[in-house]
Amino acid sequence: MRKRVISIVCAAALTAGLLAGCGQGTENKEKKAAEADRDSVVVTMPTTSEPEEGFDPAYGWGAGEHVHEPLIQSTLTVTTKDLKIENDLATDYQVSEDGLTWTVTIRDDVKFTDGETLTAEDVAFTYNNCKEKSSVNDFTMLEKASALDDTTVEFQMTKPFSIWPYTMAIVGIVPEHAYNENYGQNPIGSGRYIMKQWDRGQQVIFEANPDYYGEAPKMKKVTVLFMEEDAALAAAMAGEVDVAHTAASYSEQAVDGYELFAVQTVDNRGFNLPASDPQEKDGITYGNVFTSDINVRRAINIGIDRDEMIENVLNGHGTKAFSVCDKMPWYNSACEVEYDPDGAKKLLEDAGWKEGKDGIREKDGERAAFTLMFSSGDSVRQALAEDTANQLKELGIEVTTEGVGWDVAYDRAQSEPLVWGWGAHTPMELYNIYHTLSDTGIGQAEYSPYANETVDKYMDEAQETATLEESYELWQKAQWDGATGITQEGDIPWIWLCNVDHLYFVRDGLQVAEQKIHPHGHGWSIINNVDQWSWE
Image (cartoon, rainbow, N blue to C red; front, side, top):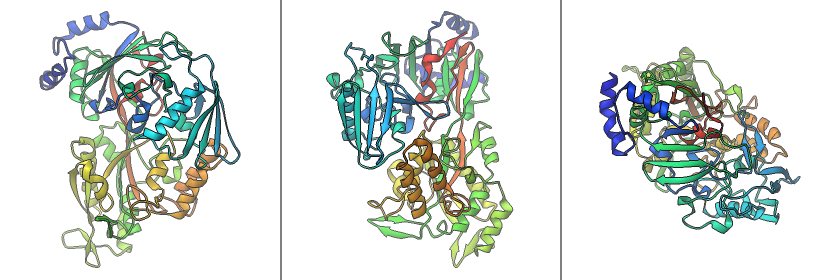
């Protein structure tokens, strides 16, 4: 079986010129491992992790789908293992009573790798540049950034934004004097590593910054290879890499000299249930007759066996998901439900959805049916969609699965459920999914028709609190306050299925430092703390 896998995937890896001896045998692999440099590491990542626009924070490096702390640039703050905030470049930060002014003091001993001193002018330039150009992060809450002196920067906000420190943890500071349209291809920073080489479509090589102001990295050289999962498996089998990303479908594969390493995540999978009655606007249909029934949404939520999904789709490598922010400091455990198929059937019966001759329920001439879309080419989302369809059929609900491209998925999700992937180290993930947008669509949430003034109010108040800690309770109340919210007893406009473990084959002897919960995206998060890795 192992030889068959190698024969299938070896060609893909060789095409990229990354494997020297695919399938050459254990002896060759052990020799390569013995010769490996003990202060360097080779890591694979999905091809989608390669930043199309380069290593420029203004165009998403460090943010977006693969949220991480930039290796090349320094950030004002960082998140800890328990997702709290610590200082990095910042030595102190304060917010005004009205929440409209953040004042940040930075270190005075930091230099860019070209020898120039990093000052508050660089910080202000970075943020103003991101506000102007960012296509990934939302900077609408920032009016402008100004340097008050060499070590003090002031952020003027358009509205109170208590979770600003989470934004400061992912925006890498760039040098104003060395920034131009080509910065992303040849970045200069002040972080733990210097980008020494980037071969597009193949690899990027980082080397430790000898002038880094913090603790010197243990790993002096980090090579990232961009590969599909099958090629990454072949690379591990050939002993060419130290850490290879993999999927649940490969998790039972034995790879000599490697152990499977699993990281818990908030990389969740779930699907929206359009919560309003159908209406048309600008050629787009919003809402769905069947899923607009709150009892239907509640029945679906308790009628899905998440444990079965994790076992059969993820080979046991995942955790049950009940919200978009499981395990986060702002998570409300009231989101959790027990699998109850009998209760789900009773909800449907009591709501008037009666079983027809073919076993599918009907009400007032409407059939208990919907299409569940998934992104074409994503085998996990497809499998989750198929499993959902099979489970809901037992409740008398007919689900038709369909693979679609993202060019049509966003519009169609306004009226038909879609399997999504979310998860971030910021409460704004809740806001972006559930908060009403008054200037788009039909005055409801962005990704699926839903609106609740009470939920909006809690999230707005959470942004206006004086401290992060105060905001957590309000984010939790937005989920459920005892009477209103987005949970089972509330509106339940989204169904969350599972958090997908991020899996890696790790070479024996490599000590990967303790990982904090990974966000959405099986990419850069694994090497957030690569400077702390070591070899036995």
